[in-house]
Structures are given as structure tokens and as C-alpha cells.
Image (cartoon, rainbow, N blue to C red; front, side, top):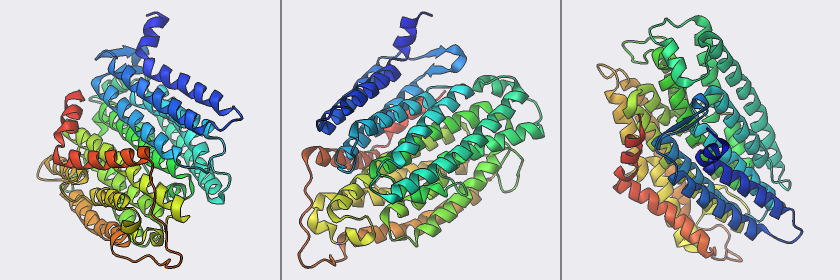
Length: 487
């Protein structure tokens, strides 16, 4: 294979790199170029999406370091779409002094996500994790005018570097026991072989590293401060794009590489393996995330603990295993990511107008912006799992896959716990909607002015809300694509 063939197969990643360099160069100009930088970044993401659509259906480079399949192409487009909406969200944020540098970091983080999604080799997966993580650490602490942003960046960096050490140590143990770094080859080595204690330690350490990435309890302690203190576009991308790619990779690692060491999390047939570990993480995340979210008065912090609970729900599909469980996980994490980007978009506009994002700042939002109130209602009710929104079908598909896994409904205990957690979540999501629709504005004199949206903000928020509604009514539009792309 020559370099032209390599460039053709890696065209989407090459477009993102060139766009990041262009945005960085434009950001060095003395004139105010934030609008131009945003336009160039958005155009680069669209060109990269077009390049993904032009890729061949199947290709493998360098023993799995770059893999092109319908699944990887689909989720590269999803990651690019989430980055596109984040660019729009960052466009309306006037706190950045160096807008070009911020967008370049966002694009490089997107490149890391694409490398994560498009690889089946442990070394490349770790490189993608580190590229994404280093960019997100800086993005979390990018707002120098807010001390909470520096705190968020520092905490995210410290926890993230520790998790990376766990991941690398675990992957090195797996490599030492199997003698290969390819996921398919590792699965072949483990087939029909009893799991050695050293290999089990490597698997557990790898899962700990990924539990940090998806903010699963008890490895979630960075999430509340990062979501609340980081600039809102950074928090939105950390909560959406990073999670989507992490669940795609985690699913490939546990189902392809560690598949023979799955074990069982069934209540009547518990067998050691990675499935009981993920089941314990899911159960703890659901309980802790939902219960602590009840006590929150800051909307971003509430969304952070909600994210912990949703990580627990999403892990149900991986514990169930198989194509159906993995497909349910991918479907749910995708709709959750788009929902959360939309919710953070509303929070960003409210914060811009009121100077805060506590519940009190959302009082009487219906009178200041009916469009924002309607969009927030769709996003919150979808997160709660009410029909006919996408969140309802995502949870239904996840719980159904878990119920059908194994014999004699062995995961019934985990599904029952998830249903209990969903019931608790109704309260705090409805508290947000109560502030939006029922509570009166405490600021009477002078009255708060209506929130004005420009055309791009209106189109993006309306588009995200419409997408969540359509995927609830017609879930097959995405679900069929995901099912058809799975091997």
C-alpha cells in the first residue's frame, strides 16, 4: 500500500487535521476572527463527514490500527455531528479570548474520537484516548476569567491521568499474557483458556480506566466539578462526544477481545469475569447518580449526576452482551449524547442572559423564550424516558435486551434497579421543568428582558429537539443502521 492509498482511507482524519491548523492560524490574527474561525471549523467538519461517506465499506490497515467498517463510519459521522453542534454552541459563548485556539483543541479532540472509533488495536486506542483526554483537559480549564474553570481542568486532569495509568497498566498485562495487541487476536488467544489471575487483573484495570471515561461510579468524582466549572461547550462535548466514542471502544474491547472471559452477572449463576464487574459499576452508578441528583440546585451539576446514572443504564447492554445488547448500548448512548448537547445549549443561553445556571435562573423561562422552554421540556422528558421521545425507546430497548440475556431472566435484578432509578429521576427532571413553566420570576424590577436567539441558534436547538422527537417516533431510522453495521 502506497501513501496515496493511506491518505485516501484516512481522508476524514486528514481533513480534521488540516482544518485544525487553518483555524489555529486564523486565530493568531489580531483582528476579531471568531466568526471566521467558527465557519471554517464547521465547514471542515462537514467536509470530513462527506469524506467518511466516500470511504469503502470494508478496509483494514496495519493489522487493525485503522479499520473501516459500516459501524466505524457511522460513529465517525456521529462524533463529527456532535462536534459540529459544539462549534455552534461555542460560537455564542463570548468569554473566550482565544477562540481559534479553542476550536483547534475541539477539532483535535474530535480527531482523537475518530481514532478511537476506527481502531481495533490497543496501542492506537490508547493514543486516541490520550489525544482526546489532553485536549479535553485544556478545554475544561480554558476560561481564565472563572476560577471554577481552572479547578475543573485541574481535577479532570488529575483524575484522568490516574485513569490513563490504570488503563495502560491493564493493557500491558493483557499484552504480556496474550502476546498481541489486536482485539480479534486477543479474543482468539483467550478462547478455550482459563483466565489467569494476572490476566484478570489486567482486565479489571482496563475497565477501571474506561469507567472514568464514561463517569461510572465510583470513578465519577471529576464529573460534577467538570460539568459545572468548565465552559459550557467543553462540558457539552465531554458529556457527549467523549462518552459515545468510549462506549463504542469499550464494547469492542469487552465483546471482541475479552469475550471469552465474560463470566456471568446473573443473580442465580454468578461467574467471575468482566460482566460482574460492569454489572456492579452499573448498579452503583444508577443508585448513586440518581440519589445525589435529587439534592442539586445547579442545573449543570444535576446533569452531571444524571450522566452518572445514564452511564449505569448504558452499561446494561454490555452486561447483556451479544449483538442485541451492544446495539442497544450504541443506540442509547447516541440519543443521550444529542439530548445532552441540546440541554447544554439551553443552559448556555440562560447563563448568558442571567449570569448563572442555578434553578432560580430558569424561573419563568416560558415567558422570556417559549422556544427555549419547549426545547428544554423535550430534552428533560427524553432524559427521564417518557414516550414518545427517543429516551423512552432507548431505555426500553436496553431493558429488553438485558431481560432476554442469559437463562431464566438472570439480569432481572439489574433491570429492576434501573427501573427504580428511572422512577427517582422523574422527580429532579420535573423540578427543572417546574422552574421553567410554573415558578414565577423572582426578579420583578426591572423585569428581565426576553432572550433573543439568532437564526443559527434557533435552527440548531430546534433541529436537536426535532431529532429527539423523531427518533422516539421512528427509532428504526437509527436502530436499523446500527443493527446492520454490527458484525
